[in-house]
Image 1 (tube, helix red, strand yellow):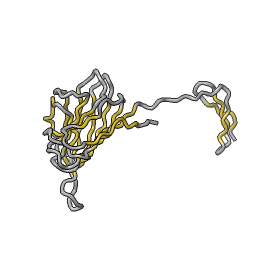
Image 2: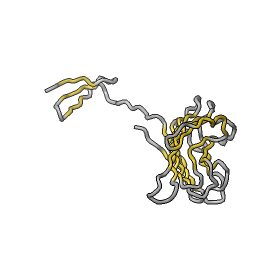
Image 3: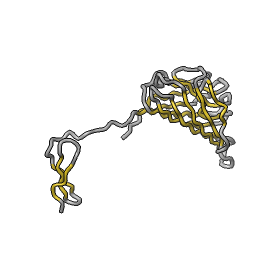
Image 4: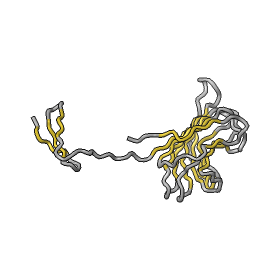
Length: 199
């Protein structure tokens, strides 16, 4: 079973253009949620990894299932959604293998006009950070236009490694009784249960 660990949760206090996790534990799988409150300067919601603001990011995106935008190559941040001064929720899943480019999938929803009479807008993004020498251990959020982030905007990051395989530490000859069908099994001490009695 895979266990997720909350690695960081940071909230903007106002009059800041970025929020950052600081140093987090390296994990093979990362899950990032950013709840953006209206009041930011607009443009796209962006992440950068390990404070890398070089042109090392590439992505494609689609709004409301429309055609993909593919002009987002050699960017200085990873786009995870639009904001345009609306409340927005961005969710990104990242595969964080040290020797591979870091691939991610992001889904976001913008509130648009308040009330049930207006549907929200969705954005789907796939992207990568072209780094093959380090795992992500720091994530920074900002908006495209680098304006102040609305107070209360929050970024939370979870991480997980692959599940650890467990083996039975039982002596050879251990007998197990399965009570629903009255079968008996004997453990061979390596990896096999042998049926001993079957009624």
